[in-house]
Image (spheres, rainbow, N blue to C red):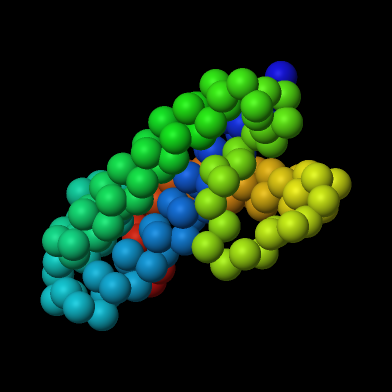
Length: 137
């Protein structure tokens, strides 16, 4: 069950990134490209050249964190104490020294936000697929 929870957390994180970057990319296209160059993202509009590189870097980072967290889970001293989705990396020190109950509460919030982001991303795809227009007009 823990692996399913971890998969849901990771897909939620990816959906949060996607639902943030999709409108941002379309707004930047509108600001920086000519009027005839931008359009619907899923129908092959001309995108800014560095945005795919940013998304590739994010995907590589997520892949590294996946390998790292698997190595941590395989350690003998962690065992069942591993919280799903925990990357053992908190640069802002938000949950440093927090009890496990608080970490689980934050995890539930992250799950909810990830589920909402998955629905938002599906709505973005649905809207652009039906209307053939960019999300941001």
